[in-house]
Image (cartoon, rainbow, N blue to C red; front, side):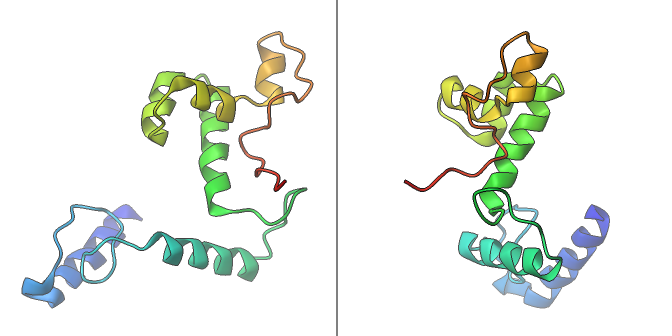
Length: 127
């Protein structure tokens, strides 16, 4: 799939010629410029609606929730918190530990797993 994407991107680059913005990014707009985060979020929402993505208990799944889910799954699979921290771009290990700690992972470590920490895949509650 990535090879197909790169082929489409090469065709876009050729078509744009001197107007190509050489950002070095894998996912870009057709002229090579950065994707606007709001566009990516809007498209994710549209796709979720198209496939009837089921909501989580606090509302619809947000694109940002996928970051937390990836951190949780990586950590539960034995991933190192420092590597997860770097991948997520967190400034401190404390926040990475918080978002990647799920009740299931806590139980595996011998903790109570009572749900004290919000699972990384769960969206934040609006207060």
